[in-house]
Image (cartoon, rainbow, N blue to C red):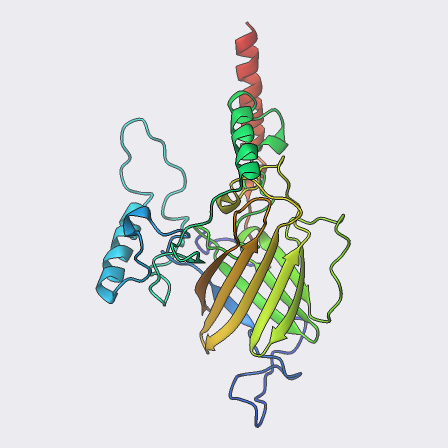
Length: 321
């Protein structure tokens, strides 16, 4: 969303002062010695999650190809362009902030593993669940709010775990304190508090929408493992990469590495052997930005859900006549 809403004020939990560690490296560090990744970062990009089929085995663009692709993507995603007769639009370009360029590596997709740039196939079990859900949706698309996507219910978006770009609100504020890293997610105002003290994950019976993260440093890279995500085969997860399917075996491993003063390289591996035939990994470059972060007033959960459910009740009454 464009910056026209009331600011969401964040108070840092620790001093923002940093220092250099003599004799180790020139990396900027916190007063207690951890690599300093604090700041506001954006992952807005025109690079698609999966490689377009027409690009086949092409892993990287040339500089000229990247320029042409960016121009084409901006035109294709322009929500203000005229629509064919009978088609209805949604948000227009006043709402969108996808960025104006692809990732710095010029990769043709955010998925870097498998090398074909595509999310792996679903397992036969997961595919059966997806087909069963799709069949139920034909007759019961809105018996209750739980039948709708989490995004429609303003519960969770795909910008949290893993941190994938959305059409807008692609900003994150990272705050460091001794033993903790906190990531404030602009999209839907989630806050991930990541302990770094080697504590075990919570009991597997305790599930949370954004999971249970645990972090540690491997050299200059922050590694975060998230488990206990609150999804299952019967729910509709509001992020397309899971195709509405997940279970208690879902695990996400994220890596944050400072590339230069204004670039944070983000890599995430998604594992769920019940759902995917193999793990897969995304990588993107996050750019430092001035911010600030703002509140996301997701009104769909207040108005859209009521209208969806009441509309289907009206259809049911009409069918009984």
